[in-house]
Image (cartoon, rainbow, N blue to C red; front, side, top):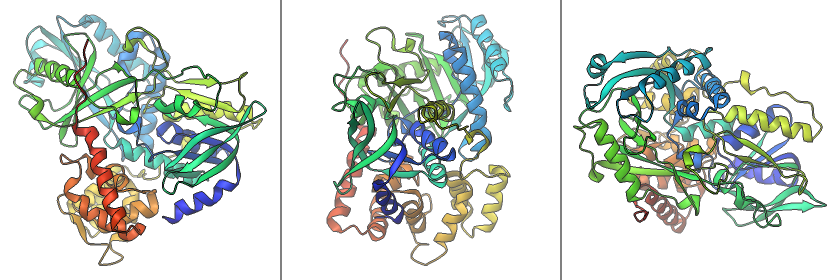
Length: 545
């Protein structure tokens, strides 16, 4: 057990001002905001930080161009403002990304409507650092995007949004910021029952998933921000609770560069149903998706079905006729569940993407549930939630996070820091660049640990230069508890085409030494990781309509 986990477990005997259930970007953002305001905070998650919806997104930091079609102008403005904040405060993780929006004769929206939307998008981001959009006619568009289908092409708009290649690392850094502000952070800690006294939630029974020990946690206020699991947190604690979450699933395909593949991201309307789809350059490959289908079931086991894959492939091949993508082209797929408000019927695309603070009064006091929320707007959602909590606790506080950087943010900018770190780290250039990209300025601490002993300098994944010291760093400094944490959400080699399998045995050996695993536990950890990878490879049965 790491020393940080031991300290967090010891603190569970104290009463907290705020218990946050759910450790995705929104829950961690709430914990960070509240801790910065001086509240005593405990944030827990039944799995690892950001291992749920936060890890299964399109990895976009965007204003939500498609939300303009639903007249959610306020949400777009909020998203664009937070996009700018992330570009400034986490530039090592969030970077500008150029998009092309092609205009076709058979689009669901006329090209004039799309151009008007781009003008409004620019107007709503009046305080941005990114360039304004440019529009082009058919001939120029064809020159800029030679692989694009010419059939019905009328022109295009080019604009900028942003991308977080490692959304998992964003969650980790928000956790580190919350912890530095004084929050108690404990992953693999499941809320099994809300504690209710005299009509008020006063904490929760929390099970340590690693040991099975149950702790009774006391808190003056509780926020349920478990994403698609929010209803599960309430189940068994409230008499006949109303359903809050009506999740929709989004599937993404990961492929290698293909004939005609663009040098920018594409945002386009599917020919078959007008839904927005994207083709996004990502880690030297392409991320294509996503779908938007209603989902019932365990969000932890959701996967792609053949119908979704057929749909994405067909629409991408229409856009890029030379691509000839097939199931054999897919390196892997991944699918997440959006924690949207429950709606019994209607088009999933019509369900609002605004976040909702659900107050359980008068049935139950001391509890707030968060419905919805986006990767981009976690900071604003957190500010709204903690404003509400502070009022309910009769504490006059003001959010401070808008003026703060995330822990790895380089004040001189990522490019300049990367060059300096490459010179000073003593590591091969490719290794230094990867560490700077993953850890930002905290890469210096990784490099120092690697250099501290011969054993920690040993390479355990030659393909990317992963060393034992980096694995140990994620355990000691970043609350990695399992093999999957290290591979999939810390070092990020779990996103390579082989999903980290080539490095699994060597990394497990380092983890075993650091965490005290015996042979049986090491075998169990490797088996658990391979089971986790089934989400990326196995298909659900084809949907029947």
